[in-house]
Length: 230
Image (tube, rainbow, N blue to C red; front, side, top):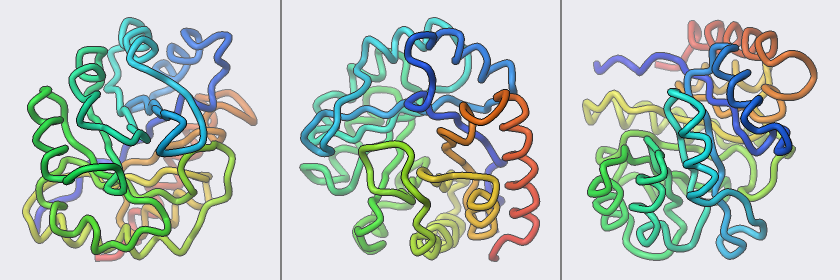
């Protein structure tokens, strides 16, 4: 059996104070974050607008942490090179986006970035099953993409378990990521289901010092992982 990757926390900068983004990046790094998550929205694939390559580049200049760039956009292939040049380490695209997912995987690999594939809560697992063995991360959305602050949807957890089992079968030590409504309680549930990469927005940046928030989250995912489904 291929061992799962180590458990990692990735604060989402969508929940940070945009007026002091550099400070938020430094505080997340100092607090022990394992990566930073950046949500890219185009106003078409989701009804919202957010970060572009220029902001990714600005974050890249202020941290050595890996940048996990979530492309909630209609044409991820078209922008793969731009986000890689800006400093994205992993580019995560949605299976629901335009085009053949295998072509998008090749385009992202060709840019030099690691590849992640995401599926929204309403999307059946079968949409990504054929390409799970070709990616470095499977991102299971536990909220509807496009807006922060939504409540966690527990009905997606079976997809997390299926993704972990499928990756172990394929022999790839890839991450299973959970994104949306991640709190101390829901992070533990996701870890038990097999998640290894936890995108944390409000639970990282709000409600107390980020170091304290991440420490609580890390303790929760470690406890959950000890009872993980195998």
